[in-house]
Image 1: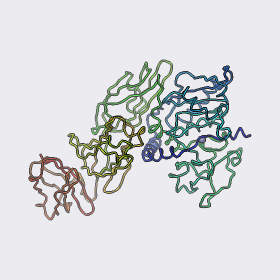
Image 2: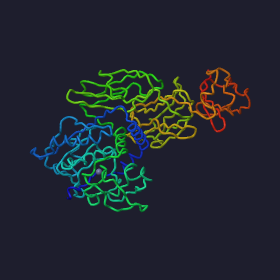
Image 3: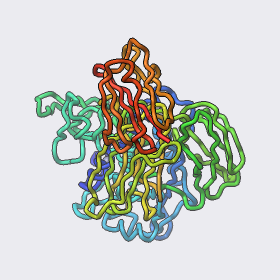
Length: 561
Ligand SMILES: [Zn+2]
């Protein structure tokens, strides 16, 4: 009986919690995108291949040990689960057999030496062994893993690898999932039954019920919860004994929630996308990933290793578009396109999916854009800028000083509608802002007449720079007072400009700003003669004019040449 109830040895650490919290906004953004795509039944059904290095520990004489058949069966079960996270695991190179009786009944204090001797970098190393014992307490566990940014390894007791749920559970930890009962195995979860704090405590997942920590003694053989513990509001817990990330009976653990799948995909993209089998890996880059125009030609360069043939689906419709190594494709309609490359080495095929990788005619509704930056430990390497379609710099910042290391920047800028802009963030050292020298990140957030929208561009891991092109859509207002009903002519101009507005929606006033936001002219409009503005004393360049009527406003661009 005890063997049936051996727990998982994975623990959440202050480091892993801090790691998660620093990137929480990005993780949530990716989760929301993942779940909305799933709800809309995305066209592309391709799964990204993730390499596993299988290490099978045997007796010194080569006897015993996990069988190849059992390994294949265990991986098949795992892959059935993880297809819902758009991930698929494959074995990187041959199985590594470790014939060492001293490791066969594994003590956790052997981990570092074993990992140094046999571990493969940038691959999920899974060690299968007869038993796993915590050296500190002498207690036996079924297996353990590490939450990001912990090492890329999992220890699995052979019998537990065959129980149908523990291997999927440990891989869940590797992709950032906590136990449904939260970070502690000794204290009752703080997550409330009513779900009101589900986002900030417990497992930080909102579609898994608050869980007071399950075990074989409070889950019956029908997989029903039989406990009666209550939360801080005296509400009785209603945990889900079927969730794979619980401590329920192993046989009962058969489901991940939708958000758990979305979380694992997001964590893969943010923290685990370094996983690459050194001799066989699928990957690619594009010369341009976001384009304002509705048509664009993009060149994809294969960066795979070990391929002898290539299959590209460049628009996410599950149809193979090209079978050459490098391809050039012309997109003729606006949209966000998944790009998938499958490669083969004659023996097997693996796949890399980049979701919404190519964004054509990308448009964001906004009157302002907020830039948030969390600096890494080398703020002096970071700089950024917004440019217009002519390449003129509208706003910029950096470099920053050492005093800014680890601090946050939060600035909001005006943008005129109907135009294309390019945001670029750079790291002069060429190592991005995450994650070797601190957890730096950046986000662009749209604001529509004071209302904050959802982040539309974010990141932290890049090399020398990362950039995004975006159109600002006109924001419609009431009563015909909107972007399309007001025009400015001539524009560009040398001396005068006239505001053309339908008579029934004459603006109340206008204000002209420099691109740095400095107010330089403001006037109330009393009659049509006030619609002609004299600009001859202004320097040449780009300006914004903000027109207001009642509580509404539109901002447009003026160019003086
Ligand atoms: Zn666990």
